[in-house]
Length: 125
Image 1: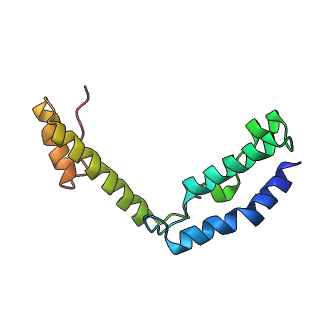
Image 2: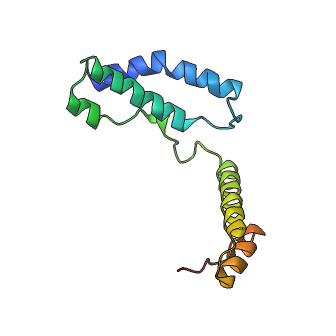
């Protein structure tokens, strides 16, 4: 089997199911395609092809996932990227502040970042 045939089959069989799950919303509802789910389904699909002997070890290890499995630079609106990054940053900082860093300078920087000061430099060490 050639890669083009595998991609065509994956797009015909698996991608519609993933798109339906994205449309319904999944958990949590996503405003953008679920790229991790798409990439994982490609990996599972090629693993099955390899186990069934339809592709070689070299093909299995060398084939890249189709373009639908990773975001294109302009496909994810910047406001969603910023929002997700902001949520991740707040969650990380909350964990850091719960642990109570021994360094008061780090605690102060974490509080400034949590408050939205994006120009704060976090001390190393």
